[in-house]
Image (cartoon, rainbow, N blue to C red):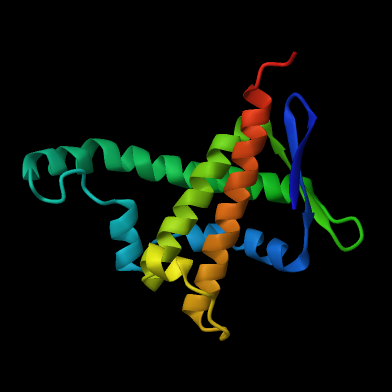
Length: 167
């Protein structure tokens, strides 16, 4: 896969194979924490972890609703971009992302990675081990986390290229 600017306002991620496309189209489901208490806790963890209950309560009342809205909006933007600009020439697919949507894409990808890692008990140690040879749900979750991380790297590199001063 590669990311390149088509113009000042549009980024294209191309070279998306069948497997990568299948993973990408499952982003919204991967990011949804509602089927997992661990994922919900990871995405909505309190800032003081109970050390200051009054601050945690204020955070829960004032910040958490906005955070959930931010997450939901980011996932919806990704879904809209996928539906509106999915291109499948030959065996490789591509998606066009407005440069203004890079941040929501990064938020949605990060949310999905955090939710999957919490849901399946993936740690930094397990992510650094050789991948298992099975197709257990935990192994598939690791594949998602790795792929979404790679996509984040592509988007960040493209955003940095966009921000670099031209000479």
